[in-house]
Length: 243
Image (cartoon, rainbow, N blue to C red; front, side):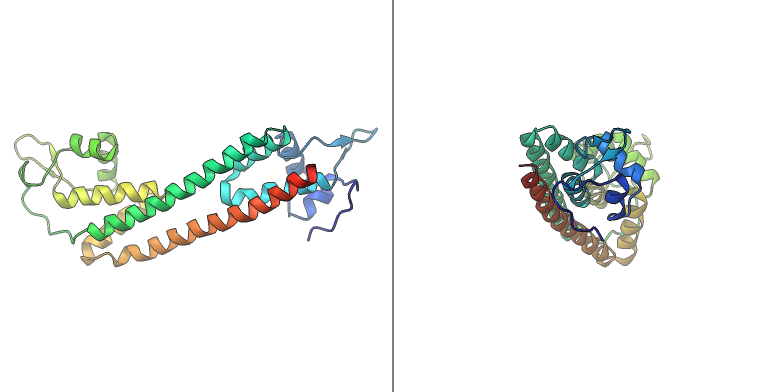
C-alpha cells in the first residue's frame, strides 16, 4: 500500500518503489525517460522525490493498461515538458484506436453472420463462377498477395489450383475465410489462433467455435475502456497537483 504523503515531504526512490512493487532502478529509469519530473538532489548527489513525483508515477501506471506502455510514456513526457495539448492529442488517438477496434469487432461479427458452412472440397471452380485469383482478392482486402500465401501456409486458406495454369483459385468460401481472417488479424489475433478457429468452423459447419473468442474480445475492449477512465482520473489528479 502506498502511504499518504504530505505536500513537500521528501522521498527516496525506495519510498516510491515500495508502494507499487517496483524496484528503485525502475523508478530511476522512469525519471530518466521523462515519465517522472526531474528529481532534486541532496548535497551528496542522492535523488529526492516529492508527492508530485508520486502522483506522476500513479498516473503513468494507471495509463499503461488502457493506452499501452509506449503511449503512456509519450503522454507523461508531454505533460512533464508542459506540452499538455500534445498529451491530449495522444490520449485522443488511443480513444480513436479503441473506437476503431470496436468497429472492427462489429465487422468481424458481421462477417461471421455472412459466413456459410464450407462445403467439402471438390473440383476447382472456373473463374467467372464466383471464384477469383490471388491478385484481385488481395487488392479487395487491401493486402499483398504474399500475405495470402502466408495465410495459406498457416492453414487459414486452402485455394484450389487451376489444372492448366497452376494459379491459385479462390472459391466463394475461400473469399469468406480470407475476409474472416483479415478481420480477426485486425482484432489482434495471431495466425496460430485464427487457423484452428477457421478449421473448427469448417468441421462443425457453424460458428459456435468463435463465440468464445468474440466474448473474450468484447471483454478486452471493455477492460481497456475502463482502464482509460482510471488513467484519466489519475492524470487529472497529477495535473491538478502540478498547478
